[in-house]
Image (cartoon, rainbow, N blue to C red):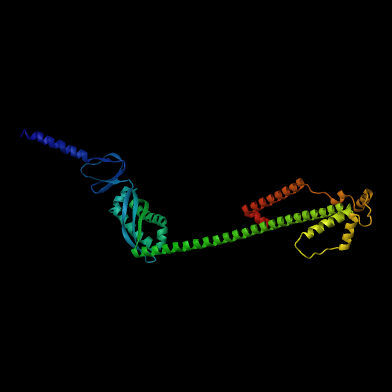
Length: 363
């Protein structure tokens, strides 16, 4: 009997510890707990150490952190009868532990099922092209609908993200063909536009080239005409001066000098191989002039210096008759001026060729 006393004491102490421990509840910082006693809701236990009635209490802890729920993939028929496989991810957070525990059996499963039906309803009202191009709008619409429906459960839907939109295989092939055709169409348009621009630029280039060519031809014709004019003037001046020199020199010649010249002319004619000769004057007068020079005819009076001066007075001052004879320096100066004019014309033509806008202004 004495042996049972320690055993009973140990059992009593253990039972007391169990009762005390069952009345102490520790709630983590990211949790809240529902406290019920004998099937009756009492209150919500906050974070930290909480003491409740032992043995007859029930405490259910709920996680207040953001939870990620995966919406399984499902096939949805769009408004234009295109089958699409869609799945999504939902981010939820418990804001009211009491409603999350008492208003729904399992708020996680209920939120996932609600997301599936809502996703099917939203996508079924849209066409495939709108679904593919307006994914962000679908996410916002799903979030608003789910958040409104889960608010009575004490659950807040923070975000909804469509993870994958997978059209059927035949739809994909049709979309690829459409995309390929669209790209070919754009390529053809770009190619045609490039050819058009190239033709325009080529025509403009030919136009400007012809303008510059015509301008160069005009400048060259002007320079050539200017050169011909200067050459004709210089040649005429040379002929005039030559004739004036001959006239001045011939003014002092007498009959003897003319006879000597005539004899030299006959000598050069006689040295030729021809047997027929034509003289532009009477031969008798020529012989008479030669005989007079040789002294066999009547004496021909010689011209005196006064006679020569009188002849010069009649003809005029030789310097005035000859006029200014151009010197070598004067001709070089004229040629240098002509070269400068040609260089200026070439520079102007090159500047017009390098600057098409200037050529248009000149035009």
